[in-house]
Length: 125
Length: 457
Image 1 (cartoon, rainbow over the protein chains, first blue to last red):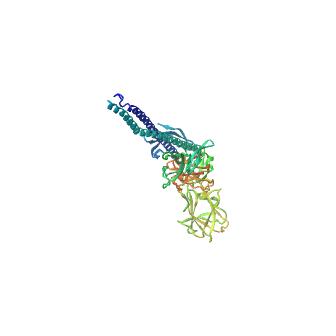
Image 2 (cartoon, each protein chain N blue to C red):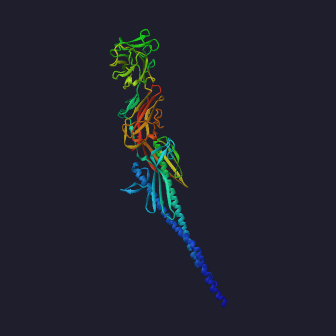
Image 3 (cartoon, chains in turn blue, red):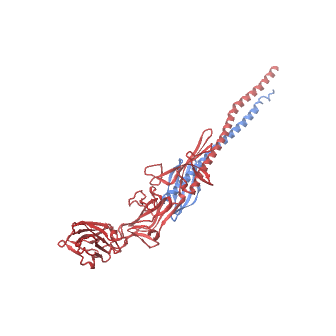
């Protein structure tokens, strides 16, 4: 065996190792990414339904008390706030913070002939 | 040379063995990592499906809520499509498809007197029939069992409507106590009264003499006279009023100038009967009123106090006369002496307080009433307030409660823009409200124009 031939058996080993490590890294990365996406999605869901809860709670409280100006409320362990400002129409806003994400919703409410009329009920930035 | 060649052949084999050894050592954990990653992706796929199922449960529930609040009940459920719509299916442990178990737990929500959500059964709190707490859960089997779950609130805010009372016809269907309808606009309620001037001599009709232009009626000069102690019985001072022909026809004294008697709640006098047994006579204060019976014991001064409305009736006019009429068993020859005839319990003018109980409102089914608001002209010295009663029977009973959850007459809803109806008394099929109209001095009256009750359909 010549000097050049020395170590030839390790070359395919290195190639196999590189490919294997790459595949494994990819799989791990996909896995971690997937977990992170799941977690983000779940947090987002929790934030969304929590903030909608808070806004609905604000509707029902204002329906009973037109002087209601909002409150701080905990839903799913999240700190949520609601505020009611303005008059005819009133602007309802709610927000909940889940991790680094904040989800917000707002609606405009009018009082017409003794009935609550809700407009522009949507998620806001 | 021969030895070197032999050595080189051995080195190649060693390299292969080393390579295989390294591969064996490194590839196993690498493959293990890869498998773990793939497994993780698989588990992640299941988690995503679990989250989708959670979303499906929640949106299905909200769909049912939006269709009708009545579809929601307390308990454990899952949602499934039935007859083309999302419906709640009761299931104590949720629905298990072999991999996933989905469940919606619907629970009561308690609120305190300030309407803030508090923990279940907190002292002084009430169940809010218009809010539910929902815990949505999805569990699934994997290498280890997993569960995702969160809570949210659902409210009935979408279904509200209103009952409005504003016309004379609306108000006329209610019950009045010292209040009446007016037609300044399309129908209002105000306190009874409205005398231009208050009595100049206060509420007295007779003491030592007649006051406020009260006189003996011309047709009764032979029946009534003022007597002193030497001529008859006197309760206080020197003079009393003697009804001398009381064994015969009616006797009466008259409010000749129509001086205001409205605004008082009580008619009072002292009376003495010369008979030797109890005597019953009747009295009234207007032509069209029935006689109110009064029984007095023999030969002793007795204090009589009766509601003004028993004397005046409910027509809201001043007293025209005070009639005294013998009843059937009255002994001929009996003489009555009266002293200190007076009105009390008010200031004259408008009644200081009157109430109006509305007609019965039928919501069509058991529901929840949210807010009572009203429009009224309230001067500095006047006020309007409300209490609310609910029932599942159109005939009541009607127990009126204020925002503080009591029936006392100063526990009232008084904000014209509206107040939430006390949660302890806001559910039922039928509703009545009771309006309290008040005047501090009887000089002015509040005017109630409109009442609106917001409720859920």
